Image 1: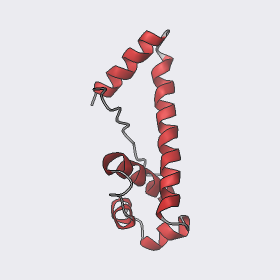
Image 2: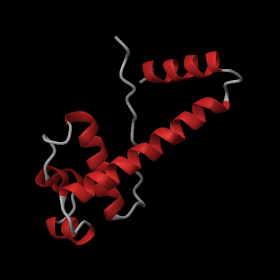
Image 3: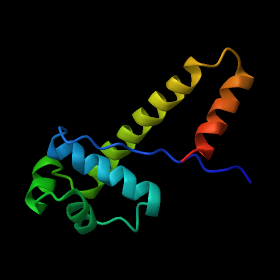
Image 4: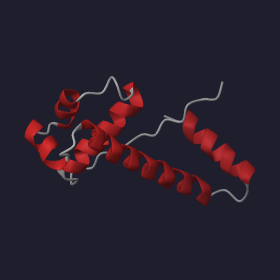
Length: 104
């Protein structure tokens, strides 16, 4: 069985509330999936007023999830780019990726 690559998201205090909502949603989706992630939990974990969620994401959960998936994709792209910086060939890249996935 192939180990699951877990992306660790870093939250920065200077991000705005919309970005915080997106980051929290991305984490929740990674941990528990789409159907187990609800608006109320996103509001609670992001510490955003529920009105803010609907202000930023007028189409509700589907819009938040769409942006969270884009965010996650960008984070994975950045991760892979950083892993590839120290690799001179595919073998080194795979080893670096494996080392990263095994680290805490």
